[in-house]
Length: 318
Ligand code: ING
Image 1 (cartoon, rainbow, N blue to C red):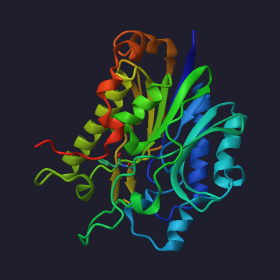
Image 2 (cartoon, helix red, strand yellow):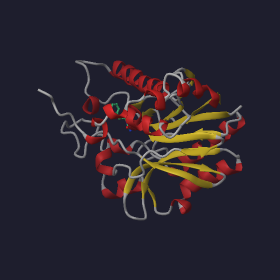
Image 3 (cartoon, rainbow, N blue to C red):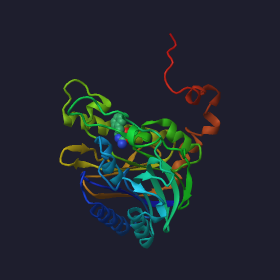
Image 4 (cartoon, helix red, strand yellow):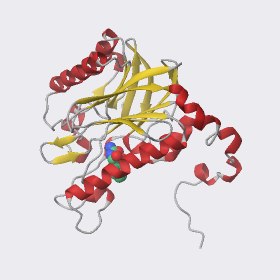
């Protein structure tokens, strides 16, 4: 019987000028809480050390302050988390803004076990724009300006007797990401996210939508993609939110969850603050989907799918 007690470590508001050490302390407390509840694999959100800074058009200096720089094995914030997880004997997956020794900038996450980085992922699907929105009061979404698309692909890896895969935030809206991981036998998908509850410039809004209505729709789409893609790829998934009101102005949705290979939400956060959501998952639950409905070897017809990788955008047939 292969079981893992997984945890989604949700982080509430982090403001533009929140001190890094304060955030690291919160992260360490969440690790303690997860360990107390018996978790052995803990997922933190995307960009877990900072506010969601791509919402701002930033000076080079301020932008630089939001990145972790250089050799990750020497990076103090990340090492504090990885070492604390080692002491607590649990694995940790955490997202951060990565400035590499090769002077590249990625929206990254790592999976660490026993004090060492086991796998690294760099966000492939960067939503938003390169240029700021023109509306004077717009809330920007400048991930294409601040990050390069990930260059590591979607690589599953072994951890705690499971096949694990990582993705970040917007990736969860793209079925290709899930399918590439599932084609490697992935049984647990880990996805940290920062999702605005109201971002009309980013995704548009139906006429006169209120903040509450927009946030409700954002939560609906968040759950839709997590549940549907978990089901269609017969994999467990864990997602962890950075949420609440950043700078008391920018609302980010909660919705940290653990979802079964049948697409069922088995655990979900109850607050918009720091909170650990835990579930004891049975990896055998993936078998039904992987050997019946979604037995890829028996059912997929790759000869019919060529456009998915040969063509990027829409080419109208008229
Ligand atoms: N945030 C959002 C996300 O994919 C978004 C961006 C939201 C794009 C809704 C389109 C629609 O959850 C990040 N950080 O990707």
